[in-house]
Length: 492
Image (cartoon, rainbow, N blue to C red; front, side, top):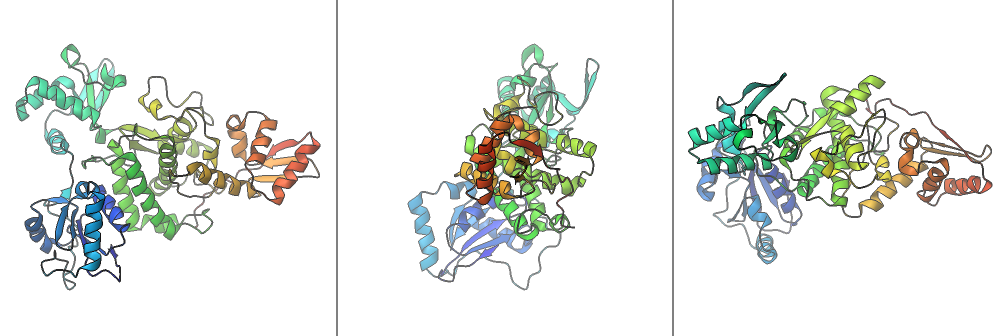
């Protein structure tokens, strides 16, 4: 990334590596300051590593310099007082670059093709990350049986405590505190025993019976599983914005102007998609309970739409009713230590834990920790923001917490103006609506009269709304539903 301000005399230099969420957040923050930002990937420029380490005394990234002033990492940047940040920005804009400014890559120096940083530099790690790496290499993790059930890649609380005492020299009380921290920070999850529902760490007589599994060993094949998010967690609202920015970059290149078709082939080969996948790993341990209603709506709508695309690229588009059922109940992300499928996000979170199409029960039981994420009531407007990858879906967009209700209302108005979603036949006193209104009729009032009133109230001022008002005033309006186009929204 090189952003230039022609009026600035100095520069901001950011040393980073690929797959580092703190680097992404820092560059997003700096990009809003209106200064020249030079992003140097030291994973690909080995000739700079020793010099950067000498200048900073650190081996974590990002490392940020305003001219020759070393600010530190992302956490240091975010904690800068507003007046100090303003001073640094003015310095870059008004003062020429000093002779001792941090180095940039030699333009004649080719990048390291392997893209490895030789372990010298890494993202700002969480304090427990190295301990987890040691645990993975120990002989503690193995298949275990409890009753008639076999659990793969697990360890008991007692085995963990013994290992922490034997290999790390921790006293029993300190080892118990570490076990609780691993559980609280979502490095591991309980798969059998007393702590499974409550999220507490087993001690005493329950220590041998209770089994845990590292989050990366989750057997549900979530698309962002397979490796541990070792970076110190970024707040959910912040990582939501970072993922949204990444998705916007992908959409700008591979989404049609009307938002209805996607160039999946081009997107799969785009390096930005790989960076998105790396950032999605950080969802594993994100703290969700801090999200307010508006933040939760924007977060889960954007995640849903991105997860559909991720699923299409990794697994292919479903082509029949069975494949669609499996796709929406299988494609998932690990978010905040829990697995969320597409069905869980739509019907569990955004619809207030209501049954979805062909579901016999609610997504979340009363003891399911994911129930805490469910909105208190169904949000009808989300149906015009979620895109399941079919041509009959609303266009793909991204949403922000600020003013999200108006954003969703605008999406609903635009959807209802489309003849694939709403047709008013004045001659037959009939209104033909998208199947979405049939599938989720309860969200729109539950009866034809309430459904039609909802549609009328959410139409923009247009000739179609006038026609609908005329039909409704005549009475005895017939409601029918249009065929749904399940064909893929792929542009190929």
